[in-house]
Length: 94
Image (cartoon, rainbow, N blue to C red; front, side, top):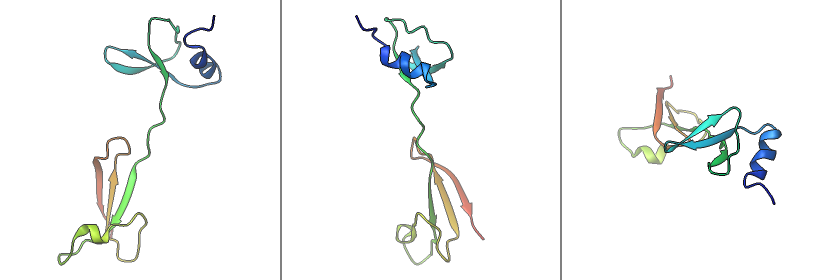
């Protein structure tokens, strides 16, 4: 009979980071026991932050000026958390 966590065991043996669900949250575990009564997963790869550049003007809507790459005149760099979408940093570019 195949072990409940066979795929995770193989992934861990090949170097994957394993997490265990404990007290309502996922926690990294160095030496998983792969108990059949517990939940495990491969640690997800975090989503990268998203950066937008802007040239906001008092006479226009900032959305009209948002770009994913800096262009001439960009004077604002906004960095958003890749996981939550929340603004992490706002930097004035001179």
